[in-house]
Length: 208
Image (tube, rainbow, N blue to C red; front, side, top):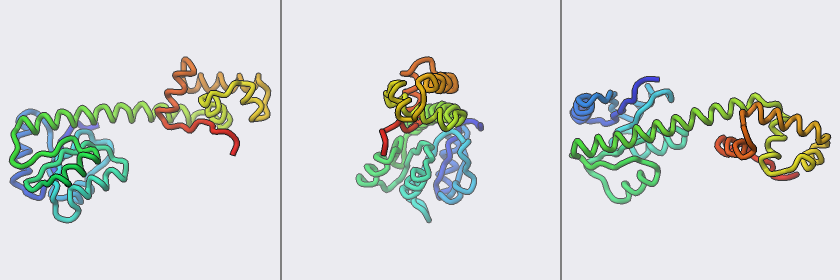
């Protein structure tokens, strides 16, 4: 994975250059893009960092681009900037998850503080994504029957209830349950439940 980078998306080349020079001076790598479309052409989800996004761009506006990224499940933290903001716009982008809304011209420390916040959020998000990916890999390593038993176990069913629902013996259920615990590397039922919740694995809700 490349170093944490600030992706500057603004159609004003002089602003991009100024922001880039400022951030480079404190050791923060930057990349510049004149439009949302230009950024999108080079993006891959292995990149780390945050986006410094002009709210009013030609083509897809910054506000529209934020919505597009969110719909695609791309959680790159966004810092908005504009010389012509208004209260409804600020409310909209902040409600949608923006880190900060900076009004041009803004102070160096304002920008650096927002970038530090954004980088921290991105690290947390990527760490969580990695954990969930590991949990999902364990879930996928289970057999269909083991996943079925896990759904029932995490829903709070007892072995005898699971045995009745699946027309199995309690001994067989206990074997499946042990394989689930081993396969998920879960040390306790509580830990198994937390992992399933984290990965949004659906628990059993009873016969349909």
